Length: 402
Ligand SMILES: *Cc1c(COP(=O)(O)O)cnc(C)c1O
Image (cartoon, rainbow, N blue to C red; front, side, top):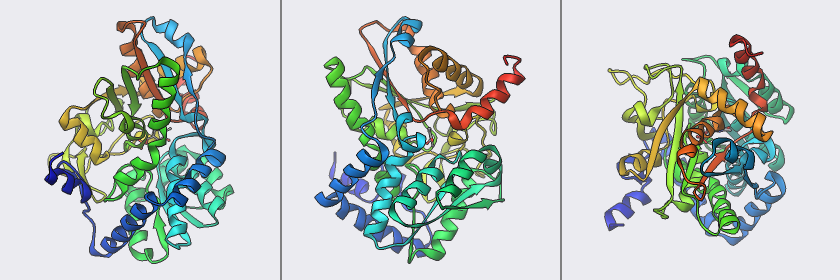
């Protein structure tokens, strides 16, 4: 890396992407957060406490599972699943909320806020707040509150307050706006636990680091099981945190192909999907420069996905960098294909994946048959599908399959 590139990375840039596009009131808070984060990462005591939390609360390490029946069904590459669906609260989100929860204690703050779409990040934040004795407010669009009633109740049961957001499309982007607005007024005593590798620096790097336990474990588990690294790693991309977490620890291993799968939604017409990297243009959203879905006037476009967790018009700046440099390939999976992949995994392996994760399963279905039996695909199964069952049942009914 050139000195200039290293310098930019230190500033919170990944090539031309990233940065800190926020009002002056947040600059000091972000600088403080960055200082605390860097000192925590260098502190063995903090690392030991984080490891303990990941083990005893999240249940890590998550298994890496050889999907024998799925492998036989597709008749090509060997399929392995990294089982983030086995984590406490049902997804990879907990890796990040435990890390940022500990950081909140270290900063001496007593309150946390979060934004949530599907409610998975809200639930993981509410859980961390309960464990660490923090007050917790979660911003959630009223459209998502309607779609994800169970997760709203789980958050409330764990002592969090769910704040309804009625602006815009009433989904994730609007919840992010409100959380940022709250933080500007409350930054003295409140930490904003951002849920993905998006937002102003240091969030993209910090959230990626907290999610890297996925890829570090997967790397070790794969070497134990197969004596080598996988040929392909596939992960779904909303903001990009589960993907960054599994990619990053093997990003320097050039022989490992990496594929990120975005929400292809109903169609590739603007407003019908959430494929920011595949169909967006560089712009600024929520304090960071990255690929954004926008109309001709540069207005952030409405987005759609069957999976609320992928329903976001931006994406992490590091993914933008990986796209431009060609290190990672990005593609899409439609709503219908995600539903089919969910049903397939449920029937063949007895695993009901989150609709988000099913996007990655679909891409594996496309690739595996043309690969050789000694080649390996590793799928990051970012979460479990319990939260999606009502939605899936409705869709299958509409299709006449139920
Ligand atoms: C939130 C969520 C995602 C999308 O977020 P990323 O930051 O892209 O990982 C994917 N899968 C599940 C199960 C989620 O809960």
